[in-house]
Image (cartoon, rainbow, N blue to C red; front, side, top):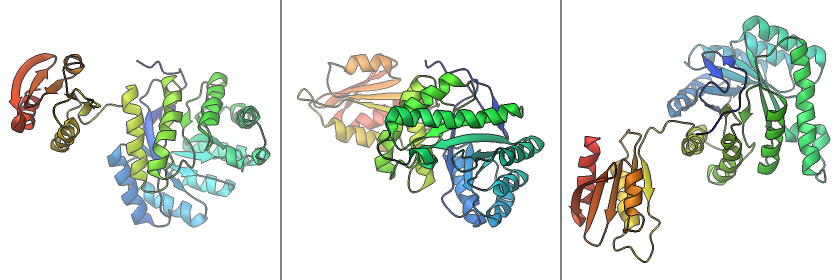
Length: 352
């Protein structure tokens, strides 16, 4: 079991973020905030997919006006993504944002930051201090060593946090993102060593879903396995629901998210198999598509690993040339002929 890093707890509307709370999946709307109906639809889809927080861009006054209307139409807390403009930050807070994201790379004036802090205090709004490598002016050159890039991101974050702490504002979440997995990992490790605030994880601008999934899993998985991370977002180009689905795929194997559907363990096959295991597994997966039991099912093709997997699975089948032996919690419960394997498996599933 992963031991989470101990942090403070930050309240974002009805959602609590911190080491004593479950890791929160979040995403971001991909349509203009002024399109209220599309935003509401997308937020509801994200909530259905497992997101507990959703972030919206608010680059203009019209966006913060729309944000206020959207807040009233959805049932999960919303985050305003603020860049460059102090006015947008304060407008978003007054519009009902449960949290706002500030970027130290483009809102730098201390007096301006204090104005935002004062508004956040008044409205009990949390804030994420989010450093992006691409927005730090000192990191524009390509020849800057990785260690210096990490150090500059952490330094930028420390300067910002000092302002918040001087104002006795501690409802903050920290993040530092890069497109580079190794720099993202190292920077977040440094932040975790320096502060006890909750941390939001992400690999920024990760790409199309099929290209973003593995780098995001490597980056976030490494940090989460070390107990670092309290809320996550997978930044992919395209449908934001994909972000939530990928996030769950990363969290479930680490034991950080409760699986809602069966987990299929499948033999990779080799020269010992006497049945088409892949075809059988695909048929079983299709048969389980509407099943919502968080159980483990093993589909094995020979006696080498079959019995062992059977003891570790809720249900297991070891398939041979013309039949399969089915186990429930490690005990043999049935034998099925080749053409009836799936039916017998489903019968045993119903008994669980």
